[in-house]
Amino acid sequence: MTIAVDTVRDTPFVVGGRTLHSRLMVGTGKYRDNETMARAIEAAGAEVVTVAVRRVDLDRSKETGILHHLDPNRYFLLANTAGCFTADDAVRYARLAREAGFNEFVKLEVIGDQETLLPDVQGLLDAARTLVKDGFKVLAYTNEDLVTALRLEDAGCAAVMPLASPIGSGLGLLNPYGVRTIKRRLTVPVVVDAGVGTASDACVTMEQGVDGILMNTALAAARDPVGMAHAMRLAVEAGRTAYLAGRMPKREVAVPSSPLEGMLD
Amino acid sequence: MNDSIDVMVNGEPRMVARGATLLELLRSLELDPRAVVVEHNRAIVRRPRLGDVTVAAGDAIELVHFVGGG
Image (tube, rainbow over all chains, first blue to last red):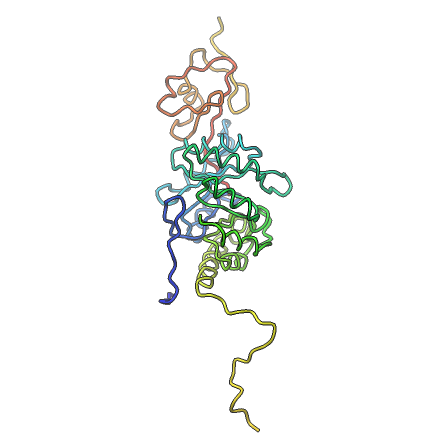
């Protein structure tokens, strides 16, 4: 069912000069099989799809390559630097990814802590500066710290990607204020990356006014990834539309919805 | 003189024919050059040049591709 909504008009979502048609970006990791992954991506309506760079399995004991299952003409492949703990490693992975020949975009991760996978913001800034200078369009995975986000924007990043909560945790949006503040202060797009667990998390996140969400585990680890992908698509649209429509003010006391006049004696 | 040399491919020791190029190494591993990115001693070697670069003993070669990730 489609309802014509004349009053809610969205602005285009442009990252690094590329206009995107979906505010939901998805990862390709941890699916039980590639067919489920492909169906979930389709149900999510995603355009941007992330991939990782890893060694080829020379023994062919398992086929790990993903490109047989993702049409690069249909999806915009966004390589990540997941697993990198130093700026040098992240730059190395980004350059290898670019050489694969799809585009100059990279989702930059420089991880600082094994247990929480929280970003090393110093390494992140170093790598971002190097990659921007090298012609990359950098989408930087960071925490919800405003000052780091501002520095990443100053460094020339195409988008800043604050987390909702740690990667793969499914804890939802832990710091709405921090994410909202980053969105309010930055000019480049803000895409929340990591931590969304279910549809309500996605909706609340989009209601903060951010430009989009990137998620992976929330779909891959759902009992029904395809069903969850559909739910996430609706939730992202709902949250975005609610943000544009503008919520009512919160009040500490009740305000009746029905007239006080005309009551019986 | 020995006909083969030792190199490291994806972190593992491998024997390759002396004088082999990176393109020949890929062929011997049954890898499609269009499906992998080659790093030779930390420097990326672009596809058209794979046939020009000869492998030397002790070289470190990384062969990577895209896998599922978030």
